Amino acid sequence: MLRFAPSPTGDMHISNLRVAILNYVVSQQKKSQFLIRIEDSDKAKNIEGKDTEIMMILEKFALKHDSVYHQSEHLNIHQSLAIRLLKEGKAFICKCTDEDLEAAREVAKKDGITYRYNNKCENLSHEDYKELQEKGEPFVIRLKKPEHDEIDSFVIMRADNTPTHNFACACDDMLSSVDFVIRGEEHLSSTPKQMHIKSALGYDEETQYTHLPTILNSDDANSVKWLFEQGFIPNAILNYLLLLGNSKAPKEIFTLPEAIEWFNLEGISKSATKFDIDKLRFINREHIKMMDDRELSTLFGFADADIGKLAKVYLEEASTINELESKIRPIFSPKNFEGEWGEQMRIMEKLIFEAPAFESFDEFKNYITKESGLKEENLSKPLRILLTGAENGPELSEIYPYIKSYILEVAS
Picture 1 (spheres, rainbow, N blue to C red):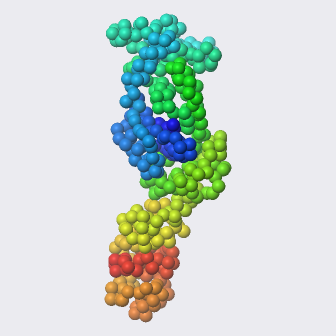
Picture 2: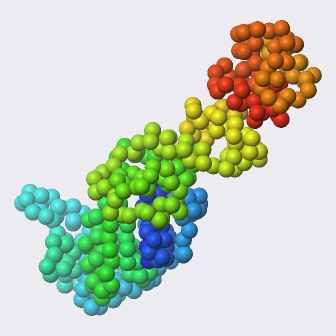
Picture 3: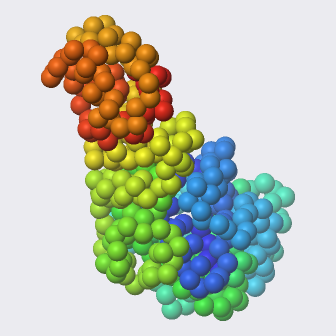
């Protein structure tokens, strides 16, 4: 079992998406189940609707899951397991307040040692649990440190009787039989603690951990939502994130099913990798080229393969859906006849409305040339603006085949 465990506390970052993709790919390769766990135990940090947004993003990337649940659904189980550890003498109650701990830190800092909780707390056990609850005295539950380990005792249940991230995560991995964890290296320090929690609970099934290196130059602006807003498509983003730091990829452009065939975690660099927006732009352009023409046209409000082909003509100068839309929209928008070339454009507009349909651009251009009497720049400049809404761009002979059926709408 593999899992992706995001928190609904903000927009999904590309590093989180990368974790989700790699977990999905490996689950497919291992023919194992893929679980989504929304880690919402810290209620104060949750943002309403972010859990739904996470699921919608995963759907866009075709990362199908076998099951999904919110971590808060297991609160009673987490509490029961913590009490069990108290009863077994593997955990203890700690009444140290934040002020006590801060004072201890300051003293320890002066003495050049690591601060610890008040050792007297270790004498508080399960027998004191109900009494403290009835009195309403604040306390946390700490797991005792292992005998032969550098890990100190740490909190597993907060004063509000909710589990800490490490405790909830370890318990849920255990309950779901998660045996392969792929996550960011920021969780590296948590791994020994979570392994200790499982051991204390008597769980002896082996769990394999892989920690992915940091993605550099990827600030808060590089959320998945931001990439969508910029006009990057899911297949390209997925391609880029699987390629990132991967020296074993057999080719640069690929789809998710293809990646499942050859991907190997061992090929991922152990060093931090840089987010390269220009590389993503290149990959995005290549995936747009691969898109079905009619499907591409729907992104611009059409359902016509010719409009998809028209968009691809502009890929020499555009890399995202937004940039393509900025080329396509002016073609079908009302033209400005008040500019420098307005008089010539009016002449051409009238001729086009009176003309028969022309199959080729040469026939169309010859007709306009002959009937208008316009030549050279007086012909080429206004004709381009009339047909595309821009003064520059691809050859009109490349564009005309895809707009000829819309010519009356275009030339107005």
